[in-house]
Image (tube, rainbow, N blue to C red; front, top):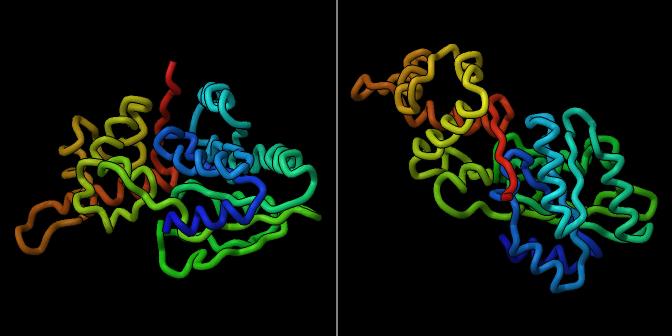
Length: 254
């Protein structure tokens, strides 16, 4: 799958790497960046979903990442920053050429392409890595002389269970969704202690207690042993994170 992304990069003049602004480092692929630079392609980094983090945090990440590549932050939901992104692409391509949008699943790559196009043009999957979405390279006109390649397959999620979850691996495909869900819960609680209770109507004392109480609250009980279905509760937490229902943010290195 990664080879398809590499092949797409070779066919364009520049790439736009889309990151989740809540976890830029974990949703960034330095391997892709190195390959693009090695092959003489310009790199633009986009911090997406900035509506989910404080603006000062977005500014800090932009300053940090701009030391290596031009960096823009956007929110497709709020229609923020997309005009600046379009202008940056035109500048990088000197007014004409092709650009590839790359990134991990669920970073919002296709949503950005749709906004730049002005109407829905690239299929957006509600589940990461779903079959039938972005199977082949799609050529999408985003300006009079600029075309976007919506790369097939996206960057495949890898790493430890938490990294795979954050990088958009389908929760149903995780061997054990509980450990990454516990980390997400703790991070959300540290940033916004009241958010979990407000969202789920369940008190948070610790992660395992929360998953148990969430399963009971939703009526998710295993038929065999009559115990709360912790796997289903954990998958729900991961999916809600990607949907922006619960959120947290990280800070760039000092």
